[in-house]
Length: 156
Figure 1 (cartoon, rainbow, N blue to C red):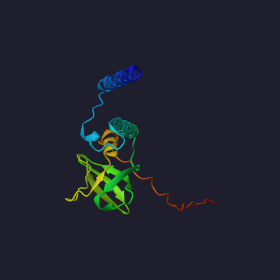
Figure 2: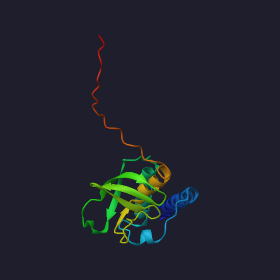
Figure 3: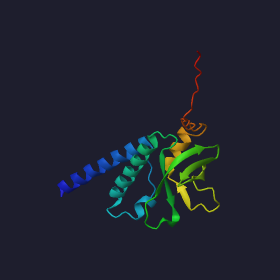
Figure 4: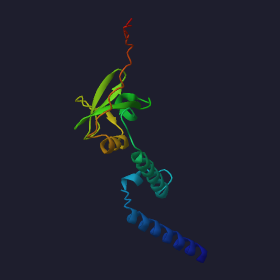
């Protein structure tokens, strides 16, 4: 019985140390994250922390014009999210290349600017766009080299 008590006291000390470390790091978990935990509350906390770390790592990556961003669609029904390239960014709108057209998305919430909002940019990608591309111009395309015939006059 005393071994069980000592083990429980050690587990409690580890949980308290983990809680203090989370508070110090600014990591806060709501009870909603634990409501449907399959492996238990601690497994849910580990899964949540792993998701947050992956999100922070993705947000830390730089982005440039032409890079792909993830766009979700309500009507996808089991299909993978679209990967669309960033064409240009205005003050309130970001344009993504979808086939041969440029689709506008709002910068404030990432939803398509079509009055429906069924498509939206991944939150991590939207944060990267706001950080790295707002206020910058897309580079102009390289000029197409044209063959120019040169005429030379020969003097005799």
